[in-house]
Image (cartoon, rainbow over all chains, first blue to last red; front, side, top):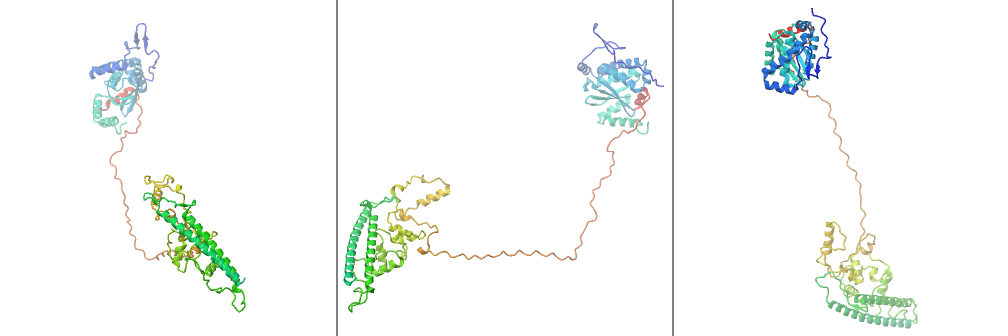
Length: 196
Length: 342
């Protein structure tokens, strides 16, 4: 049975600026550093895809652990309703200054939407690894993310298995729209028609 | 009046006529001599054809003018004397016969009086009287019975012959013959020309008003500027040189339509015969053709229809408007998402 009681998200005192010691504290998380977004993008670009992926996953796993901490465990996140979990994930993304997080369901596909990301289009790859690390750390599931499309300030990331991400990435590279890619993904799975 | 009185009157008349004729002959000779001297004087140069040279003066007047006055005065005197003599002689003709001798003059009233007149004078006094009594105008003394000679001698010395030999003296207006009360007709060219000739150079403009033409100038600066065509016409008209060397000879009368045309022999225009003809009636409209058997009209009963071909492809992609119940937990959502692509 899904639990009906879930931790409330208290944005007050979510971050503490220790000016006497020159530290920035988040509850349940190691020390934080305020870094310019442009410098972070430049660093990710210079480091390469592998380094950026590892950097992003590490950054996201910290977020997921804090969400799981608030839900007491990873099972607590699994049992919690979608809206509450999304609110906690969105709060973590907003505290680090990476934008506003949302979730879309296209059939069985789960699409995370990030608006107003300061990293821009050049930081979408890094942002995708941050989201994947957060979901993995919160649920203890091996998930991957893929940038479906970017509409000005809105970026859509598909959350799925490694096999699904590979297929959709191939279709997108072939010129298929992200909507058609999702349809194909459902058709390939055999759940597009008649499957509730 | 007795016969002696009439004879005395005739003698007196003849004496005065002879005296007057002698005086006139002397004046004519003097005037002719002056005219010949004027002609002998150097005339206008060939380079100045328009220049008018005034004739030599006689007692402060020109020779032609002096001669004209002499001739007119002489004519008036003669006419008056003849008229008075005739009036005196006329009652004699009506006087009854006295002492078996016929009354009246010795030669009779209708007989021409044999007068010892100088050559060129007409002895037919009765004829002059008749002419004068007919039209009420004084009659010039006639030279003799030759009409051509009469015409030539009635002209002043130096005058040119009339252009119309048939007209001439008989068609001269009264003003040219001494009657000042009648104006000359403006439409009669010959009459006006004759008047100008008889008038001599009285009407000639003063020399100061007609300066010699300067050939170096292309136009007359006193003329107002007009358009080019009109100016050319003026120049062309002005280029015509006078035929006789005198400007007055080039003057022609201008008809204003108000003169008496009958007096100068010009027939009045005949009245116009105007006839009003109505326009031809318009053509009648063509009648409509009667209705008859109409030819069969060929109608294509099969319409040309452009049909659309049936669509075989989906115009759009629909993901399906199915609303499924939200997953109960975030774990269930991830379970469904992880099944895709497997």
